[in-house]
Image 1 (cartoon, rainbow, N blue to C red):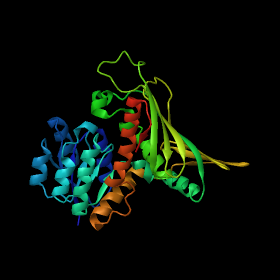
Image 2 (cartoon, helix red, strand yellow):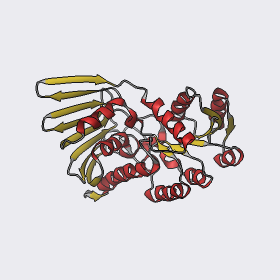
Image 3 (tube, rainbow, N blue to C red):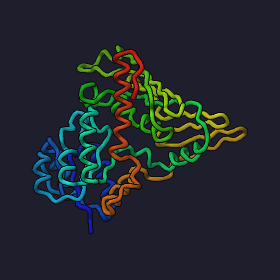
Image 4 (cartoon, rainbow, N blue to C red):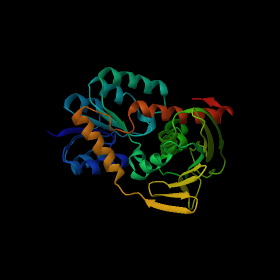
Length: 321
């Protein structure tokens, strides 16, 4: 029996998942919704489903086994609550929103209905990330440095902090999430931002750059850098330092493991995005989310860290998570 799937949002990230689902024999795309009618029609024609411009109508008319919610950060306006109310397992793209209060209401309804959920932190599914986790097991990490440094995304909402949450919340969230995945929970954040570099762009109020130092409950410390002003180069990833071990992770590309008198480089060897979607579909079929590496409840903790970064930038003071 196939898993009948609907989509809310049919933009770029939705197509990323749709292409994966086309390779999963148990997945059946039945309905696609977008507020831009032409985009919804185009997706429905390509993926052979019905199109909608109102997700409420879609959820009322279609008998879905699972739902993908792929909307911008500011557009989380009850879709998750409605899905949970109807008992529909859902996958939501990161970040899960801009409000912890809203996310916790969703979490309560998920728990009430015992639903399978997944959040789009696909980096957790890389084989090289599992290699890092294994290398860190039983060892004490000294510190780490994380990076997401590049240029300005072209979508207009990304440039408005009230709509995107800023770079830490919307983009560098992948690095903050990996830090939690590898090192545990964050106790305190102190962050600073830099503005004034991109004064040639209109309607722009996110930081050009920021640094956030994290103190973890287990004593690990690390700093994560964000930058969106670069017109060249850039760097995304993480450097991890232990007493007799250093690990350089290049985002979705490779790791370099350096030990005394030895250095090893390993490229990513799996289709981690496809795996993420396969795991979700299987979890829906089995009604068992234990293999999902980022549930909605777990993603709330990442959102809390990145919102704490924003709060610290605004106040100039450390913020407890």
